[in-house]
Amino acid sequence: MSINIIPKPLFIEYGDGSFNINAYTVITTESCLAGFPAEYLNTVIYNATGNQLVFMQMAGNSIGENVIEYAIDRSFAAESYSLDIKSTGVKIVAGDKSGFFYATQTLLQLMPPAVFSTSSLAISEMSLPCVFINDKPAYSWRGAMIDVARHFFPVSFIKKFIDLLALHKLNTLHLHLTDDQGWRIEIKKYPKLISVGSHRKETVISSSDVPDERKIFDGIPYIGFYTQDEVRDLVQYAGERGIEIVPEIDFPGHTMAAIASYPELGSTGKPIDVWTMWGFGKDILNPFPETLRFFEDVLTEVMDIFPSRFIHIGGDEVMKEIWRNNPDIQARMKELGLEDEDALQSYYIKHFDHFLDTHGRRLIGWDEILEGGLAESATVMSWRGEEGGIKAANAGHDVVMASNHHLYFDYPTDENEEKEWWMGITPLEKVYEFHPTPAEIAPDKQHHILGAQGQIWTEYIRTQKKLETRAFPRLCALAEIAWTPQADREYGDFQNRLSVHLQRLDAIGVHYWRQL
Ligand code: TNX
Image (cartoon, rainbow, N blue to C red):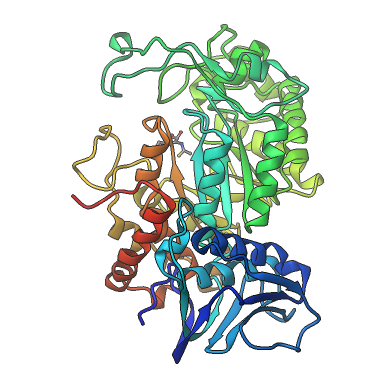
């Protein structure tokens, strides 16, 4: 029997024979850390077969036949597991919740793809090949970003997406929650961020090469936001599946929605609307103490709802000429002893690096945060190719590789799809060929590469169907980039496994890009 697991496990030893799951199979768990993964397994099997397996808590050792046993071994590294399938039963060993959960995902991928179908009793009996698997991830940050600011996606869809990340052993969901075109997260202290900032009057529909004065708009108001309660529910849902949600509050650029809500935050002094176009915005935050305090308040509420170790503060595409043209801001820069606008951007980031640090969190931002000098403990998300990441890692900073050349999934997969002039084309193979640790990083600095992440910007993605079609199967390739050591990866072998994996996506009901 051929085994088609994505991402490819570290070590597989094939055995003889098979194990059959039937109505008498029992699941045992030695530790409560395996509680959710075992339940997850039971639910998937129940949905596909109609068999509810007997589920027992056990002290270990006294294992009979026809058992799927979850045993704990605290010496296992984070997220690692072993899975041993013999004709008499299955033994899973891990040291943490994620390890148990990933073993469960691997077990499910050893079953027929129809096991992932929830709409019917898809299969009657399930046979698993006898095999021993030992597995652990190459990188600790295996992520995907969804831009819910340009277009909003409801909680139900984000949950479906979280389940898909979990299927691929991805462990980070970065939510881009705020931008010029909308503020999508409730902040209790500043209610206008939602009552004003989550609405835009209409949305541009002509392409980016049409000059602003000739742009065409749809004339339809666009609204959407998450309440704090909805987000807490999402955080818990993700956490059970081994996924941390990293929130992004993007500033000091990309802030027109915030400035439309509270005009005193802006740098031009002119009242503005939540933006209805794409591209670079027309105003950015000013650097006055009240504005910094406003964003400290925002981050305080954000930290309260998101327990993530990292908080993303954006920091990208700051239109510094707006600061250059404002005499009050120039005077403030002088007061602070800042030479130029790069230094001001750096002052901003350093302020929030310190702020997050004193609250036990870590700042991460797009690679522009390198400009003017990087804050001490800041982590860089390298999006303009790999350059920023290489520079930051060699200087001793942690880095997540998010290169637009390989990992921007808003760009089309092939030339037959519609695209804006500035987008690249990112075929599946090109994604697969990406190596998160470029050769230019000194050997003693390579540990600073935390991992890789795929970006789904949504200016041109309005529907769930299009989002899925741009995300898949490129996210399957990303999962393998981040999980499987580079030396063990080969595109032809990936393609073979993918042909079976796509049947799983069909069973789940995912829209994905199909070769034309
Ligand atoms: C650049 S990536 C941006 C986003 C756009 C994206 C479109 C980054 C940090 N900034 O604002 O949505 O390109 O591909």
